[in-house]
Length: 247
Image (cartoon, rainbow, N blue to C red; front, side, top):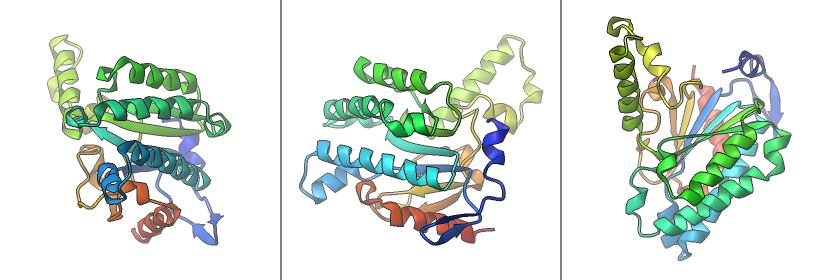
């Protein structure tokens, strides 16, 4: 992580609608649960729920940028998504989202680098191509960092990191006795990023859904009790205020 990105948030005093932000997370992670339940609750198509979800993602990212939060990660999809009846619709909407995001002014204006964690490369080709496009288009940006967890599982992330370490040991490139927490971190999907300071969990269940199981040890958890499509700027600022109460 470039040091200048971290340095620019130190000593920050900024007003956001009369609220002075003296302490902000360097890495904000958000679990976007509740899209299917929201569609049923409001008797709308799952496509409409996904579209609403992506609007919330963009507006939330802009709110984070206004507060100068350098890293924001959205947990979009777990590894069980292929079991969903609406899988094809989901893939189409995901492709449209990344195609649209790649052309958004907010990306270039704020120099947002987009990364994706998980086994996203195992998704249908049309989605993989869209993800590759936005990753390539933003690879040299370093103003802010927007990450997405797709086809992701926190336990798999740890298991995959262990597999990498085993391969390095077998190749004689690593001594097993030298493995410490920081060495494991270097082999995680999120190796280049600071651990999250704050995790916002949406949905009607008080579960983090396996997001950043290794990295969330010291993170503060904020449960909204709202389905993700109902998440708004007020809830976002409530989470930040609650975070600022912590020591």
